[in-house]
Length: 257
Ligand SMILES: [Zn+2]
Image 1: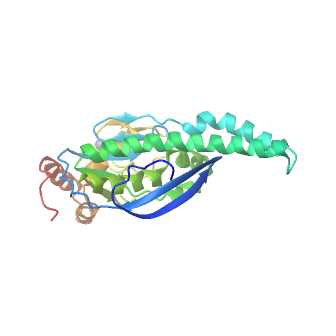
Image 2: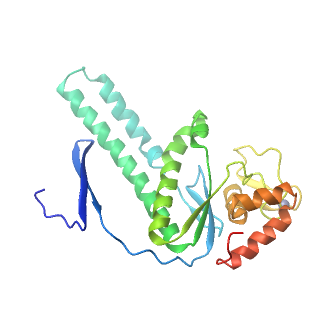
Image 3: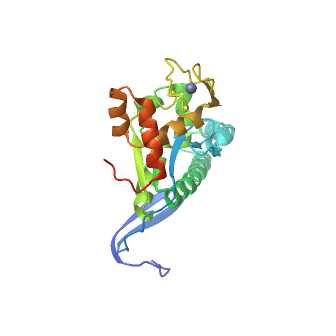
């Protein structure tokens, strides 16, 4: 390498890759780092949405940059330009590079948002509760698939898992079968049906009206540990499990028994 890199530790490997028309080298090093001190912040539930990027159980809403949607028109135009150029021509090669650059730009916008979000969560919250979404299953839904790919569910989870290890927090994954969206976060009433177009959760039992994703996030943080909830659901006591979970929220040092 021409530049003297500021690398600490023993170099393990180097990987050369090409993105659009640029070359990159990533160097893997091994070094000892001190064990992280435990993050003392509150527990938080995060529900990843389609319309907005994420909803936190404390009511915070993170807007989706809609990177792909915004650039979609341009993407369409550039793709057309590629297909119109004569195969093997110099102009076609130039058009392909322009298209690749746009794809790269879109993925950078997406990654930037996800990185900021996961860093914030891992640094400021002792426990982050997320749902184990079956992304592959959702991707089969054609109308949803572009939005889901754009949000980057898998990437979000991957980053959260390694960053919580870095900063000393914990990620808790709640079973995808936990009815976070259909359940009322106030009274525990579960709806039989909730279509994706219903953006506001209306409880038939207690009259709660809440944004669909905020309701789901609140349910996630109450779920705490999937095992606890499952055990409680089997005995039919959602209310008591909720109270139990809320009391755990106040005492973050309670052991997981
Ligand atoms: Zn209710």
